[in-house]
Length: 253
Ligand code: ADP
Ligand code: MG
Figure (cartoon, rainbow, N blue to C red):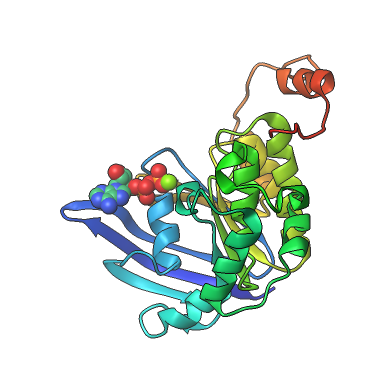
């Protein structure tokens, strides 16, 4: 394993407010690394600094050997950032949007192949604005691949999706890891973090309070004496939901 992202003593002030209070962590090449934490913890700020989209107050960030202070353009070239879904021209169709982004990156992209990857080939001629929430999310993940990045950043990619679309995105994200790409993701869903993430950092009020594998964190809590009332049920309401409505993605999902 080699380190692909190294963040040391990162601090971010917004005027007098210290949103990120000196955090350090490393991401290994090829892993899915989760940043977890309550709203306002500083997750998006941290990601956007690494993505070169926000300035930092102090600290060092090195991505694939490139120092953020010296060589932000080299970092930009090797990362894929999921745009907020509002960042797409609503009147263009998916093929046109992919061609537009390819032009920006100066790359040739096989739009059909890219749409296949996210299960959207049948929407190649559909306008972006005609997509459902899940389709928009999948499309925005597809666009992060246009510059063939080594690392992709996903900030709450499954927020607001139905259970089928959420599981479908998990498969997509696992496939991305399979292809050797490193993934950094934020999520408020702990079940999702458990399924997807090789390691997670838990961040609270601008500080990292724990970093480990999900299993490692759970085992540590349990060995500290933590107990909760044992549930005898072998399933939960989400299992019921999936059982009754199936795993298939809905036409509008
Ligand atoms: P998270 O993504 O974990 O919810 P953010 O990184 O978005 O947290 O925000 C961390 C803190 O910084 C929050 O208190 C937020 O209100 C504040 N913040 C974020 N962006 C700005 C900004 N542009 N100006 C001032 N404060 C900001
Ligand atoms: Mg955020």
